Length: 470
Image 1 (tube, helix red, strand yellow):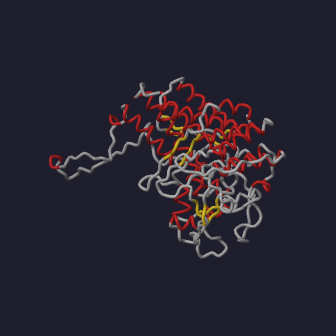
Image 2 (cartoon, rainbow, N blue to C red):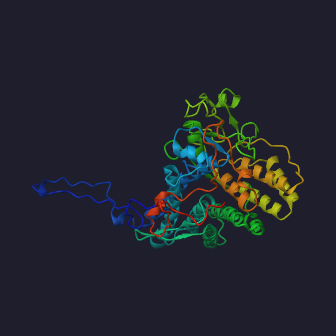
Image 3 (cartoon, one colour):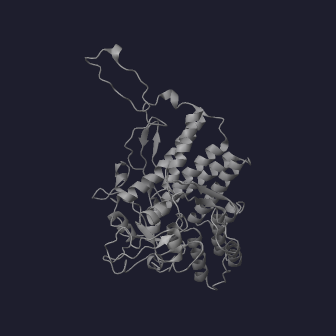
């Protein structure tokens, strides 16, 4: 965890003000309440404890769908997006040639840790000041902590430090293997499920479904395919955890960086897996170029990206999944549960059942606030590799821009034995723009983590990892 610049007093920052009173008559000082000063009595109560929980959910929103998070960087690193930007940090991410000094990745890395720490602090605050809070409040925080731990291991190189803050003091810890981080995330999920028990209110059910879907995702990351079915089978396909966005709060990250700022654009057949987000005309990933009916209807008229003067950078490809600054994003869903089941069934040589799940989704597409047209059924490719590719392609189109694609690409190498040149974009980059793609397949631990005295570093002071394997 990168060094925090603020000193926290358990659950919040307490601002102190000093007034010089020399040569002043104390009786003439105007005494006024300073709204910037938060007294201890204002935070040691049930309302404030719940505010810590709500604040953690806000950070969680920003670190996932509501900002330039690892969701976007993973898509840029993989084959969902390409850069239309001049900023080196985004260019090197798109090129798979990362440096540990990359400030954008550092910010997103911190974004994984802040909600994680906040979730722990929220549970502590609830236990101390609101012991009668509903169990789902605690379980929701177990979900947030587990989700961020899982993302950390999905995105970053093997060996990450899971440091903590105790009574306002940083407690540095040495890096542990990603396999242990996945196990830790799974334990947090199980703690959340145990805390819920058999309660069945709407919020209990909502959080239980979120924990169950996340459990299936972690089990896939662990390669425990046989356990996935039991983890997610009880989650209805109709279930959705929609993260809300607004111009006055967190706008949808993909809308902001693609449609609004044009720093990113959708890729088109970038890499060997030939994910043709534009030309597929797939209703799950509506996309458009300027002048086409979709862009005309959406009022998108700017042809060039942010780096408009560089002829090597392609024209914009816009997305229409999240068309406004207030579009909601389905972070967790029963759709994910079904797709996890399909992959696990295929690994158990039960592709017929997996295909039935995929075709049921295509026949009656779950939209979670969107309307998606039905699609024709798929047929069996007939080979092991063809079935694998079909499942990952379906996952790519169903879950575009929600942080799944890059972890899946990494698993294609780790669990399916594919090479990086069979998975990641390589060779020529952006119409012969030099240099071409690099060879990175994981995100590096940022330089900011070198503040941790237990973090190993190389001779240049940059943090090192156990390895940089997928």
